[in-house]
Image (cartoon, helix red, strand yellow):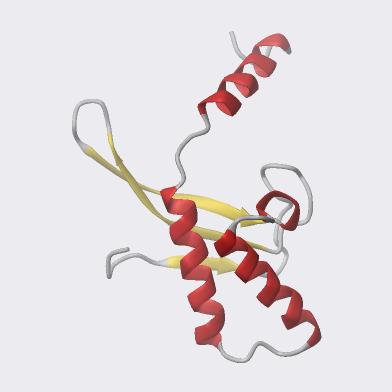
Length: 117
């Protein structure tokens, strides 16, 4: 991450998980950039949900899920501890690539239902 990166964390009134529709524990919004086909940088943002059903088994997500589970029973020890786990999880999310197989199957499903030409 660069010094200018900001991560906005939403922990209250979190919408359902965008992947499965289940209960997300938090939603983050963070800067995202990529190089387009003509070689120019495109700046924007991404959002990601932390969902126990979808993210369980991912190391950085498991650490954050465990912290949030404990936080329900006892107060979080420090904001820095929580922030450190969020930053680690966001960095893992930031590094994920596109699952081409899943993308193609979702595209196929949308075409079958007439949602795409």
